[in-house]
Length: 324
Ligand code: ADP
Ligand code: F6P
Image (cartoon, rainbow, N blue to C red; front, side, top):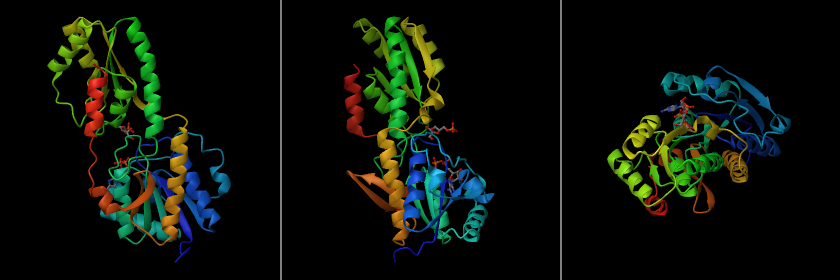
């Protein structure tokens, strides 16, 4: 059944992530090497519905592997969450001869891909999100770059925090997922890490801990706070008031989503993009590419979406002892 697919569409959807360009490039060049045409769909599902569809060739993905962001642009699209929007999307794919589609994005984007697959478009998802919150995969495109960007920024804040003997509350991205916070917490040697999945909201306990480390003679106290908990400025003011330690809040924000992808993000994204095309060529649909137990694998989208990602208990326990 090799090569029944004639034209593959590719889109990026949801929050952008460094390495998405490497995945797009791999989709385009792998497909072309197999004699398949490629169409780039701009602005995710929004661009599909408005038919912003461009022909892509090998040159259209020149000089992008090293760039952050996504050359196809990305968007969130409310209309596509409706059955009418999905039916329109499937019709537009058919009209443009797109018989295979690669969707690079997170869980939300995969739900859209699942709907298109059920409407007869062969669709494969590739995990692209800095949050590392795709349950079936221990890797998502962009996490490695984002967590390194955040780590380097936090090192800089730590320098000045130590010089001034201050407490720093540093907010990292992750509305529902605490992996960036957890990894920075470990990598930056934070004294406290507040994760949406684990934080009990007990600020008195946090303040008691800051007083305790201060009494032990620590020259700074770093609190990594995930975006999902938020309120960093208010928390910093309360810490300063109750501990007497000067405290500053820093929200790292969208700088974590930009920048040149790390080597790992370039390589893994390239492999995942190529793998998605291979799945389409094998006649597969409604699957997501993943990385698990040291291998690139694929799962049924329904199965992947039913899995729940949680913080690894062992990693979290280790983090609690190391910053004390
Ligand atoms: P991510 O893919 O990073 O999780 P979002 O949750 O914002 O990002 O989803 C991206 C887009 O995927 C949404 O704007 C919407 O167009 C589409 N999408 C999300 N949920 C669904 C759904 N249940 N059915 C169809 N499409 C969806
Ligand atoms: O892409 C993931 C993410 O960066 C989350 O960590 C964050 O909560 C969210 O997207 C913010 O999205 P935006 O600012 O684009 O709405």
